[in-house]
Image (cartoon, rainbow, N blue to C red; front, top):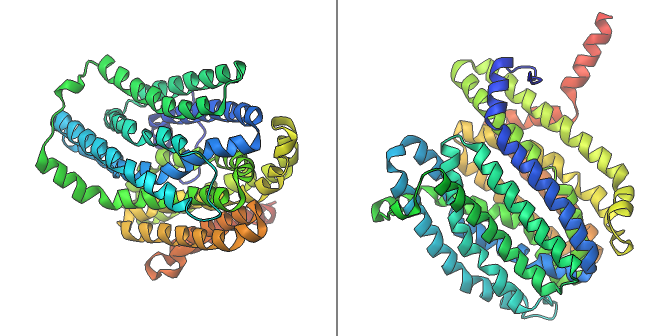
Length: 447
């Protein structure tokens, strides 16, 4: 099948890059559809208050999940590509490190929970819910196998594992709804989801004629991995803080019912975020090749990428803004209808997520990893400050505006740095669709 191409990208190269990531895109789309439908059914069954209690534990431990992963996934993929003969040492060492980090996170999670709940505005989520979900940090250590399959360019196997795990998870939740299960069983289902995914990776790894019993641990390799991956780990923690802190703060300030409503907003708004990730992954090799061979073409491809990200994200935001009242009336019960207005605000944050994903690849290509970390930190800090100021006054609408502004500032932070200001200007051009307007204007002149 012939795939459509983009201006500025060679058709054959574009098709090759897209097909290389095609299976991963299918996995993301499949996972998205299954999670969305299941999440809607669970939210309607539980009601806004219990749905808030269900979402709170995962929002809280997300920071610790990122910390326990130690930024090893992408780094191990690169190491496996460079040193395929060291596969068992690399995987064994990375697994052991992540397992130990996951165990060390448990007391920190519990301490954080009690610190948050020490004041009058503490969340009303039972502590045993946090204990159950916290073990996801330990179980996810098995997911290092994902890095192996990525290094082997076996995206189809990742797709199979992710889609099957999500289908089984969805069937379990539907069964729980069918038997009118209490909230506690849905909390257990969050942990079981992680077990399904880890078991799927193990099964696929063994099916690939490999054995985890051949994995080994090497202290020197462990030291090297930790020294080189810690910036990625810190960045992952900041990203999770950036994206989840509003949910933790909503529960503390406003209660579980408001968190339950806001969780539906986040699910619908962020369900599109797989698009920039998949698109950028497909086009990044072409951009890197242009950087190596032709600087002019490199800049053209970057501008085309920004234009594409802007066009897609603005289109999605406009459609969702007008469709949000209808969506909520079709998908959710009446107690969630407040979310329609919040969604029409929150969905515009996606414009800056799309552009941020594209410019993030530029920062990587140019070696500006510290700058990428700095802008994420700035966004996280602004998000926290605005949430503290606005949630008590404006409720969940304040949280949506805080997210939108924080994402915008983070994405365009590169305008403040002289060496990256040109890229910021290029993103501004794409944001106002300047390239598209020029093409339309030139076409009118030629007719």
